[in-house]
Length: 277
Ligand code: FAD
Image 1 (cartoon, protein in one colour):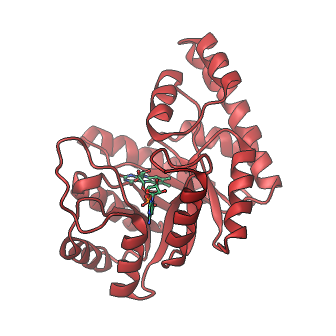
Image 2 (image 1 turned 90 degrees about the horizontal axis):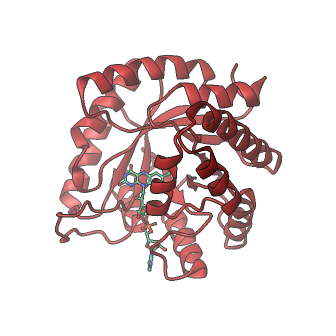
């Protein structure tokens, strides 16, 4: 049931032994879809370092390529150097390099301001050892001064040494196509894989999207609100909407799909089946 395009999956480090067990089971099912790699998020400020490392090690031991997210906000150069050395020691060759958002309660005082500085630092310290992904925002990063400033900063970040890009999720395919076009016009050649968020839980999606700046189009928000807590209907409707989005993205030239799994196998497998069969 492998899709005809490269796909990848993102997980977050589980918070409990039960969560770790559930994630192992989810991964075992998801590997059947043939991902190129699986990435593991990293809590800014180092809040999940042990959990990220453990999950990355498990994925590698399962014979799957793992990409470790790494964020720089609040970190010193020495800390990032040690972090990179630890990842090299684990045999990791693939990173998703981010600025990150500091959890409230953390002080500033780090030596990096933007992800572009992290990318440049990783290249200066480790040469071509790592394949570096960076984040892209088809609907603009929520803290950007404006769309043009955001695009220019994005292009500078890729020029600092990124190999490829994974986007924030979105439900408006045109925003992605425009973003890719604008990035190409600024000389960005790196592949830009759209980040895909399955729709399974309306309340969670609406809350999360507000926080990360992903727009839920009005028609979609209203439909989800009308379905309230009718979970089966939300899942079936969400599958239709996101499968149609993926098809449009692939027809329009997206080089692959990166799925935000939220550590669940079923919604992503349902999407892969819809797309691959
Ligand atoms: P940057 O690229 O540094 O951009 C941040 C902001 O600064 C933007 O508004 C940009 O326009 C602006 N900017 C950049 N450079 C300049 C400049 N030179 N001058 C002025 N403004 C500038 N967060 C985590 O904590 N852990 C994770 O594992 C994680 N994984 C993610 C994976 C993906 C695929 C995505 C899309 C996001 C992820 N995030 C993660 C969230 C991310 O950390 C936040 O969105 C964060 O706010 C920005 O990170 P960035 O790397 O995009 O930052």
